[in-house]
Image 1 (cartoon, helix red, strand yellow):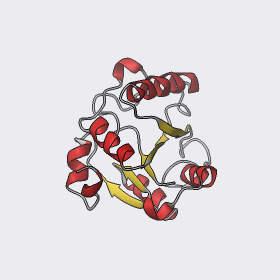
Image 2 (image 1 turned 135 degrees about the vertical axis):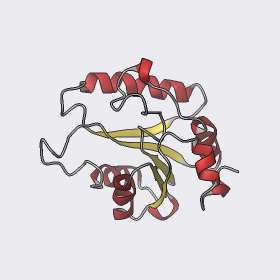
Image 3 (image 1 turned 120 degrees about the vertical axis):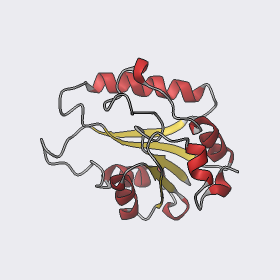
Image 4 (image 1 turned 90 degrees about the vertical axis):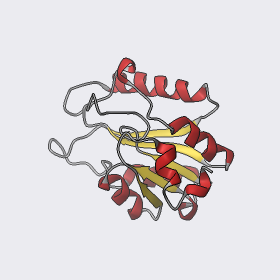
Amino acid sequence: MKVIFLDRDGVINNNAKHYYVYKPENFELNKGVVKSLKKFVEKGYEIIVISNQSGISKGVYTKQDLNILDNYMRNIFSQENIIFKETYYCPHHSDLEKCICRKPNSLLIEKAIARFNIDTKNSIMIGDSDRDIEAAKKTGLQTLKVKANADLFEEIKKSEFSGLVL
């Protein structure tokens, strides 16, 4: 199976106004996300989200808040016939506790690879931070670093992966 792994905040949704996006009313899709994901699905890719959510550890929001937002996000995409294979979230913060799942660690990606028998050589991690890219490289994924909160379709068009969306 080939997969497009996506970071959430900054790649899927805009987090310029809210560092911690955990309320549906603050969830705003970045431009080009739906268009890009539709193209990936057409080309036979599954979609998996890998996201650090340290606001849980810091007490800013709860796992229930995160689950509500995750369901909200999945519903938006399902209306466009885009189904996420899975979403993986790390609820920890390295300042508060030891953790091996928070990116740039690769445990969440490794779990997905093992669970779904993912072809890492034909799968890609799209992230907006060095920690996203570092975690992916540890597992042998191809990587694409995009500008945070940018038009995802345009960012991919400018990359070596442009053939996947054009």
